[in-house]
Amino acid sequence: MIARSPQQRLKLKAFECLCCQRRLTETNTFCPDCDTPADLSQTVATRGEDKNFISMLGASNSGKTVYIGMLLDMLHQGTQDFHGLPGSSYSVHLQQHVINSLTRRQFPPKTPADADSWNWLHCEINTGTAKDQRINDLICPDFAGEAIAAEILNPGFYPMIQTIVSKSSGILLLCDAIAAQTNSVEEDLFALKIATYIARNHGLNPKNRRQHTTHQTPRVAIVFTKTDGCSAAADHLNQFAESHLPRLTDYCKHTFDEHQFFAASVAGNVIAVSDSTGIRSKIPVHITPKGILEPLRWLINR
Image (cartoon, rainbow, N blue to C red):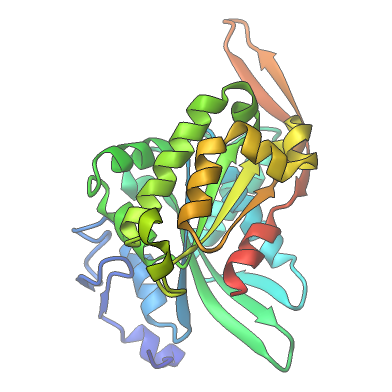
């Protein structure tokens, strides 16, 4: 795609959906086929850089929204060889939504299942040295956990998820470390469902792994979140994965040529409180992000 000047961008009246390539115009708010925001597609269409899709998948309450919002905030403060800037207002809204919530000692509310309510990370990533700098548009939707579960059971139910996953060169598979430690079977099986869904959308089969090519096989970063409350995952990462997610670990070994486990946390300390009605909620006492950038750096440095 040829880069356009600001004057040319203003004249862009028709463009393709970044997800499904349906022809859209300025009158569209969302893509009629897959519900991708038309404004985001228009912004991406005006840019000349390579498009790098990253999918973030995980169970409900695994910390996807907090992770992706903190990721964007930290990219802004990144180093010279790994830095990011928002590519659209959608990313700024997502960053503001997460950081403002954490500043108020709250976690952001759960992402709604409706696709038109999902947040998107669209970021211009600068990597490499000044002499060998690479710039890519990074696009990563914040899918709702319930929507991911529904799509896995009924592929095509959320066409946006299916299309983005199939286009993604990298996958962030988020697993709640505390849930994996206390209810390992359930967390393991759901993560395994996600892994098989990824493999199916990339045409991968464990029995035919030798036929895979680098182009066909996405990198998969399995990220244990909330490790501030699970020292075993933070201190003994691979052993923790094999002990608490044995099915996922074995499947990844036989299916994905490139996969790796990571430990991440946003809140340095979390306390649980109850209101007058007995409803419990968790409060982040202070924010100490750890291991947020490492999975993304590993995914895109291929």
